[in-house]
Image 1 (cartoon, rainbow, N blue to C red):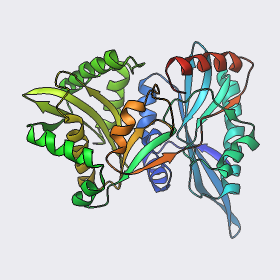
Image 2: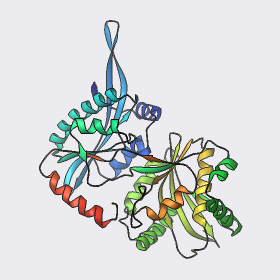
Image 3: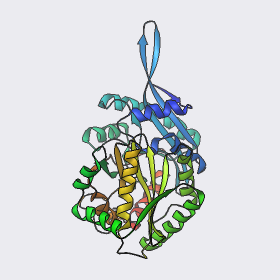
Length: 351
Protein backbone atom coordinates (compact mmCIF):
# COMPACT_ATOMS: atom_id res chain seq x y z
CA UNK A 1 0.00 0.00 0.00
CA UNK A 2 1.21 3.49 -0.90
CA UNK A 3 -0.03 6.66 0.83
CA UNK A 4 -0.11 9.91 -1.14
CA UNK A 5 -1.82 13.25 -0.63
CA UNK A 6 -4.65 13.92 -3.07
CA UNK A 7 -4.69 17.50 -4.31
CA UNK A 8 -7.22 17.12 -7.12
CA UNK A 9 -10.83 17.82 -6.07
CA UNK A 10 -12.32 15.69 -8.85
CA UNK A 11 -10.23 12.64 -7.99
CA UNK A 12 -11.20 12.95 -4.33
CA UNK A 13 -14.92 13.51 -4.91
CA UNK A 14 -15.19 10.79 -7.57
CA UNK A 15 -13.58 8.21 -5.29
CA UNK A 16 -15.40 9.10 -2.07
CA UNK A 17 -18.70 9.32 -3.95
CA UNK A 18 -18.20 5.81 -5.34
CA UNK A 19 -17.89 4.26 -1.87
CA UNK A 20 -20.98 2.81 -0.20
CA UNK A 21 -20.19 4.11 3.29
CA UNK A 22 -19.75 7.89 3.19
CA UNK A 23 -20.97 11.17 4.69
CA UNK A 24 -20.27 14.82 3.88
CA UNK A 25 -17.65 14.79 6.67
CA UNK A 26 -15.32 13.30 4.08
CA UNK A 27 -16.29 15.65 1.26
CA UNK A 28 -13.75 17.96 -0.32
CA UNK A 29 -15.70 20.93 1.00
CA UNK A 30 -15.59 19.65 4.59
CA UNK A 31 -11.83 19.79 4.23
CA UNK A 32 -12.16 23.38 3.04
CA UNK A 33 -14.41 24.12 5.99
CA UNK A 34 -11.74 22.88 8.38
CA UNK A 35 -9.15 25.02 6.64
CA UNK A 36 -11.44 28.04 7.06
CA UNK A 37 -11.59 27.21 10.79
CA UNK A 38 -7.79 27.44 10.93
CA UNK A 39 -7.10 23.69 11.09
CA UNK A 40 -4.34 21.98 9.17
CA UNK A 41 -5.62 19.14 6.97
CA UNK A 42 -4.34 16.23 4.89
CA UNK A 43 -6.32 14.43 2.19
CA UNK A 44 -4.67 11.04 2.04
CA UNK A 45 -5.18 8.46 -0.67
CA UNK A 46 -4.29 4.80 -0.16
CA UNK A 47 -3.12 3.14 -3.35
CA UNK A 48 -2.75 -0.56 -4.05
CA UNK A 49 0.04 -1.54 -6.42
CA UNK A 50 -1.10 -3.87 -9.17
CA UNK A 51 1.19 -5.63 -11.64
CA UNK A 52 0.45 -4.64 -15.24
CA UNK A 53 2.84 -6.59 -17.41
CA UNK A 54 6.32 -5.37 -16.59
CA UNK A 55 5.06 -2.18 -14.92
CA UNK A 56 3.11 -1.37 -11.74
CA UNK A 57 -0.28 0.30 -11.58
CA UNK A 58 -1.55 2.24 -8.57
CA UNK A 59 -5.23 1.70 -7.77
CA UNK A 60 -6.94 4.07 -5.32
CA UNK A 61 -8.64 1.89 -2.69
CA UNK A 62 -9.02 4.16 0.34
CA UNK A 63 -9.14 7.80 1.42
CA UNK A 64 -8.83 9.60 4.72
CA UNK A 65 -9.40 13.26 5.53
CA UNK A 66 -7.17 14.10 8.50
CA UNK A 67 -7.66 17.24 10.59
CA UNK A 68 -5.20 18.54 13.16
CA UNK A 69 -7.13 19.64 16.25
CA UNK A 70 -5.37 21.85 18.79
CA UNK A 71 -7.09 22.21 22.14
CA UNK A 72 -6.04 23.07 25.68
CA UNK A 73 -6.48 19.45 26.70
CA UNK A 74 -4.16 18.22 23.93
CA UNK A 75 -3.37 18.11 20.21
CA UNK A 76 -4.65 15.25 18.08
CA UNK A 77 -5.13 14.09 14.50
CA UNK A 78 -8.77 13.44 13.69
CA UNK A 79 -10.36 11.40 10.89
CA UNK A 80 -14.11 12.33 10.76
CA UNK A 81 -16.38 9.51 9.52
CA UNK A 82 -13.51 7.72 7.83
CA UNK A 83 -11.47 6.16 6.47
CA UNK A 84 -13.54 5.66 3.32
CA UNK A 85 -12.70 2.31 1.73
CA UNK A 86 -13.74 0.94 -1.66
CA UNK A 87 -13.81 -2.77 -0.84
CA UNK A 88 -15.74 -4.01 2.20
CA UNK A 89 -13.48 -7.00 2.78
CA UNK A 90 -12.05 -7.44 6.26
CA UNK A 91 -8.43 -8.21 5.42
CA UNK A 92 -8.28 -5.36 2.87
CA UNK A 93 -9.78 -2.94 5.39
CA UNK A 94 -7.17 -4.04 7.91
CA UNK A 95 -4.29 -3.56 5.45
CA UNK A 96 -5.51 -0.11 4.44
CA UNK A 97 -6.06 0.93 8.07
CA UNK A 98 -2.62 -0.32 9.11
CA UNK A 99 -0.93 1.57 6.27
CA UNK A 100 -2.81 4.74 7.25
CA UNK A 101 -1.98 4.33 10.95
CA UNK A 102 1.74 3.88 10.22
CA UNK A 103 1.66 7.01 8.06
CA UNK A 104 -0.26 9.00 10.68
CA UNK A 105 2.18 8.05 13.42
CA UNK A 106 4.86 9.94 11.50
CA UNK A 107 2.59 12.96 11.00
CA UNK A 108 1.70 12.87 14.71
CA UNK A 109 5.39 12.94 15.58
CA UNK A 110 6.05 15.91 13.29
CA UNK A 111 2.95 17.79 14.51
CA UNK A 112 3.53 16.90 18.19
CA UNK A 113 0.11 15.28 18.46
CA UNK A 114 -0.79 13.39 21.63
CA UNK A 115 -3.11 10.90 19.97
CA UNK A 116 -4.91 9.87 16.78
CA UNK A 117 -8.70 9.79 16.79
CA UNK A 118 -10.89 8.05 14.22
CA UNK A 119 -14.68 8.38 14.03
CA UNK A 120 -15.22 5.38 11.73
CA UNK A 121 -17.71 5.35 8.87
CA UNK A 122 -17.90 1.56 9.20
CA UNK A 123 -21.08 -0.13 10.37
CA UNK A 124 -20.81 -1.53 13.87
CA UNK A 125 -19.93 -5.23 13.76
CA UNK A 126 -17.57 -7.55 15.61
CA UNK A 127 -15.50 -7.85 12.45
CA UNK A 128 -15.01 -4.08 12.10
CA UNK A 129 -14.43 -3.55 15.83
CA UNK A 130 -11.77 -6.27 15.83
CA UNK A 131 -9.75 -4.43 13.17
CA UNK A 132 -9.29 -1.44 15.46
CA UNK A 133 -8.49 -3.65 18.44
CA UNK A 134 -5.86 -5.50 16.43
CA UNK A 135 -4.26 -2.18 15.47
CA UNK A 136 -4.02 -1.04 19.11
CA UNK A 137 -6.89 1.46 19.21
CA UNK A 138 -9.11 1.91 22.27
CA UNK A 139 -12.63 3.25 22.57
CA UNK A 140 -12.66 7.05 22.93
CA UNK A 141 -14.24 8.59 26.05
CA UNK A 142 -16.44 10.87 23.93
CA UNK A 143 -17.56 11.25 20.33
CA UNK A 144 -17.31 14.35 18.13
CA UNK A 145 -19.75 13.33 15.40
CA UNK A 146 -22.83 11.10 15.64
CA UNK A 147 -22.23 7.36 15.97
CA UNK A 148 -25.93 6.58 15.53
CA UNK A 149 -27.93 8.26 12.78
CA UNK A 150 -31.41 7.91 11.31
CA UNK A 151 -31.67 7.48 7.54
CA UNK A 152 -34.65 7.50 5.21
CA UNK A 153 -34.74 6.00 1.73
CA UNK A 154 -36.39 8.72 -0.37
CA UNK A 155 -36.44 6.85 -3.68
CA UNK A 156 -40.08 6.00 -2.93
CA UNK A 157 -42.91 8.21 -4.19
CA UNK A 158 -44.16 11.08 -2.01
CA UNK A 159 -47.37 9.15 -1.34
CA UNK A 160 -45.40 6.09 -0.19
CA UNK A 161 -43.17 8.21 2.03
CA UNK A 162 -46.19 9.79 3.69
CA UNK A 163 -47.81 6.39 4.14
CA UNK A 164 -44.69 5.03 5.88
CA UNK A 165 -44.53 7.88 8.40
CA UNK A 166 -45.84 7.64 11.93
CA UNK A 167 -49.52 8.60 11.92
CA UNK A 168 -48.87 11.58 14.22
CA UNK A 169 -46.07 12.90 11.98
CA UNK A 170 -48.28 12.72 8.90
CA UNK A 171 -51.09 14.53 10.75
CA UNK A 172 -48.78 17.31 11.98
CA UNK A 173 -47.45 17.94 8.45
CA UNK A 174 -51.01 18.42 7.22
CA UNK A 175 -51.90 20.55 10.26
CA UNK A 176 -48.97 22.91 9.58
CA UNK A 177 -50.18 23.30 6.01
CA UNK A 178 -53.73 24.09 7.19
CA UNK A 179 -52.36 26.53 9.79
CA UNK A 180 -50.80 28.52 6.95
CA UNK A 181 -47.13 27.69 7.55
CA UNK A 182 -45.00 28.47 4.49
CA UNK A 183 -41.55 27.01 3.78
CA UNK A 184 -38.98 29.09 1.90
CA UNK A 185 -35.33 28.61 1.01
CA UNK A 186 -32.59 31.22 1.08
CA UNK A 187 -28.83 31.29 0.61
CA UNK A 188 -27.73 34.86 1.28
CA UNK A 189 -25.79 36.33 4.21
CA UNK A 190 -28.91 37.94 5.68
CA UNK A 191 -30.56 34.53 5.87
CA UNK A 192 -27.55 33.20 7.74
CA UNK A 193 -27.89 36.00 10.30
CA UNK A 194 -31.54 35.05 10.83
CA UNK A 195 -30.58 31.40 11.25
CA UNK A 196 -27.90 32.25 13.81
CA UNK A 197 -30.32 34.37 15.84
CA UNK A 198 -32.85 31.54 15.93
CA UNK A 199 -30.07 29.06 16.70
CA UNK A 200 -29.04 31.08 19.74
CA UNK A 201 -32.64 31.01 20.97
CA UNK A 202 -32.53 27.23 20.71
CA UNK A 203 -29.24 27.07 22.63
CA UNK A 204 -30.61 29.23 25.43
CA UNK A 205 -33.71 27.07 25.67
CA UNK A 206 -32.06 23.64 25.63
CA UNK A 207 -28.74 24.64 27.23
CA UNK A 208 -26.42 22.61 24.99
CA UNK A 209 -22.89 23.53 23.92
CA UNK A 210 -23.42 25.41 20.63
CA UNK A 211 -21.41 25.80 17.48
CA UNK A 212 -20.08 29.33 17.17
CA UNK A 213 -21.56 31.75 14.60
CA UNK A 214 -18.20 31.57 12.82
CA UNK A 215 -18.43 27.76 12.66
CA UNK A 216 -21.90 27.87 11.12
CA UNK A 217 -20.91 30.65 8.70
CA UNK A 218 -17.85 28.73 7.49
CA UNK A 219 -19.82 25.50 7.15
CA UNK A 220 -22.47 27.26 5.07
CA UNK A 221 -20.02 29.09 2.85
CA UNK A 222 -17.82 26.04 2.28
CA UNK A 223 -20.68 24.22 0.54
CA UNK A 224 -22.37 27.25 -1.02
CA UNK A 225 -20.25 27.64 -4.17
CA UNK A 226 -21.06 24.09 -5.27
CA UNK A 227 -24.78 24.57 -4.56
CA UNK A 228 -24.58 21.86 -1.90
CA UNK A 229 -26.32 23.70 0.94
CA UNK A 230 -29.57 25.54 1.57
CA UNK A 231 -31.25 27.24 4.51
CA UNK A 232 -34.90 26.33 4.98
CA UNK A 233 -37.23 28.66 6.89
CA UNK A 234 -40.73 28.03 8.19
CA UNK A 235 -42.83 31.21 8.29
CA UNK A 236 -46.00 31.64 10.31
CA UNK A 237 -47.92 34.93 10.32
CA UNK A 238 -44.95 36.38 8.43
CA UNK A 239 -42.51 35.42 11.20
CA UNK A 240 -39.71 32.86 10.88
CA UNK A 241 -40.17 30.31 13.65
CA UNK A 242 -38.12 27.30 12.47
CA UNK A 243 -34.99 26.94 10.36
CA UNK A 244 -32.64 24.19 9.20
CA UNK A 245 -29.39 23.90 7.28
CA UNK A 246 -29.49 21.02 4.80
CA UNK A 247 -26.37 19.79 3.00
CA UNK A 248 -26.82 17.95 -0.32
CA UNK A 249 -23.83 15.81 -1.23
CA UNK A 250 -23.28 12.73 -3.41
CA UNK A 251 -26.91 11.63 -3.49
CA UNK A 252 -27.52 12.18 0.24
CA UNK A 253 -29.24 15.08 2.01
CA UNK A 254 -28.07 15.78 5.57
CA UNK A 255 -30.10 17.61 8.20
CA UNK A 256 -27.08 18.98 10.03
CA UNK A 257 -28.19 22.16 11.82
CA UNK A 258 -31.57 23.14 13.19
CA UNK A 259 -33.08 26.07 15.10
CA UNK A 260 -36.51 27.02 16.36
CA UNK A 261 -38.53 29.56 18.32
CA UNK A 262 -41.08 28.77 21.02
CA UNK A 263 -43.29 31.74 20.23
CA UNK A 264 -45.94 29.50 18.66
CA UNK A 265 -45.45 26.12 20.35
CA UNK A 266 -48.69 24.64 19.00
CA UNK A 267 -47.75 25.26 15.37
CA UNK A 268 -45.95 22.11 14.05
CA UNK A 269 -43.77 24.01 11.59
CA UNK A 270 -40.75 21.71 12.09
CA UNK A 271 -42.65 18.78 10.58
CA UNK A 272 -43.59 20.64 7.42
CA UNK A 273 -40.07 22.04 7.07
CA UNK A 274 -38.56 18.54 7.12
CA UNK A 275 -41.09 17.30 4.61
CA UNK A 276 -40.29 20.16 2.22
CA UNK A 277 -36.55 19.48 2.68
CA UNK A 278 -37.15 15.82 1.81
CA UNK A 279 -39.03 16.86 -1.33
CA UNK A 280 -36.18 19.21 -2.29
CA UNK A 281 -33.72 16.33 -1.81
CA UNK A 282 -35.80 14.20 -4.17
CA UNK A 283 -35.72 17.01 -6.77
CA UNK A 284 -31.92 16.97 -6.47
CA UNK A 285 -31.96 13.22 -7.18
CA UNK A 286 -30.85 12.24 -3.67
CA UNK A 287 -31.53 8.65 -2.68
CA UNK A 288 -31.17 9.11 1.08
CA UNK A 289 -32.21 11.69 3.65
CA UNK A 290 -29.95 11.57 6.71
CA UNK A 291 -31.55 13.04 9.83
CA UNK A 292 -28.13 12.92 11.56
CA UNK A 293 -27.72 12.04 15.24
CA UNK A 294 -30.25 10.26 17.42
CA UNK A 295 -30.07 8.86 20.95
CA UNK A 296 -28.96 5.23 21.41
CA UNK A 297 -31.74 2.67 21.92
CA UNK A 298 -32.89 2.45 25.56
CA UNK A 299 -30.97 5.61 26.48
CA UNK A 300 -32.00 7.82 29.38
CA UNK A 301 -34.49 10.63 28.88
CA UNK A 302 -31.72 13.07 29.87
CA UNK A 303 -29.67 12.15 26.77
CA UNK A 304 -28.94 15.19 24.60
CA UNK A 305 -30.69 13.69 21.57
CA UNK A 306 -33.67 12.17 23.43
CA UNK A 307 -35.98 15.04 22.51
CA UNK A 308 -35.28 14.97 18.77
CA UNK A 309 -35.17 11.19 18.37
CA UNK A 310 -38.96 10.71 18.42
CA UNK A 311 -39.32 13.62 16.00
CA UNK A 312 -36.80 12.23 13.49
CA UNK A 313 -37.88 8.61 13.61
CA UNK A 314 -41.50 9.60 12.99
CA UNK A 315 -40.70 10.22 9.32
CA UNK A 316 -39.89 6.56 8.78
CA UNK A 317 -36.52 5.07 7.97
CA UNK A 318 -33.99 3.03 9.86
CA UNK A 319 -31.20 3.40 12.36
CA UNK A 320 -27.58 3.25 11.24
CA UNK A 321 -25.05 2.47 13.95
CA UNK A 322 -21.33 3.00 13.37
CA UNK A 323 -18.28 1.66 15.15
CA UNK A 324 -17.65 3.80 18.23
CA UNK A 325 -15.00 6.54 18.02
CA UNK A 326 -11.51 5.09 18.44
CA UNK A 327 -8.31 6.58 19.92
CA UNK A 328 -4.68 5.61 19.39
CA UNK A 329 -2.59 7.15 22.21
CA UNK A 330 0.76 8.63 21.19
CA UNK A 331 1.97 10.37 24.34
CA UNK A 332 1.18 10.22 28.07
CA UNK A 333 -0.73 13.52 27.68
CA UNK A 334 -3.53 11.49 26.13
CA UNK A 335 -4.67 10.36 29.59
CA UNK A 336 -5.22 13.94 30.75
CA UNK A 337 -7.46 14.42 27.71
CA UNK A 338 -9.21 11.14 28.54
CA UNK A 339 -10.17 12.33 32.03
CA UNK A 340 -11.33 15.76 30.80
CA UNK A 341 -13.54 14.23 28.10
CA UNK A 342 -15.09 11.71 30.46
CA UNK A 343 -16.18 14.62 32.67
CA UNK A 344 -17.56 16.50 29.65
CA UNK A 345 -19.52 13.46 28.52
CA UNK A 346 -21.29 13.31 31.86
CA UNK A 347 -21.93 17.07 31.96
CA UNK A 348 -23.41 17.10 28.45
CA UNK A 349 -25.69 14.10 29.08
CA UNK A 350 -24.17 12.10 26.26
CA UNK A 351 -24.01 8.82 28.17
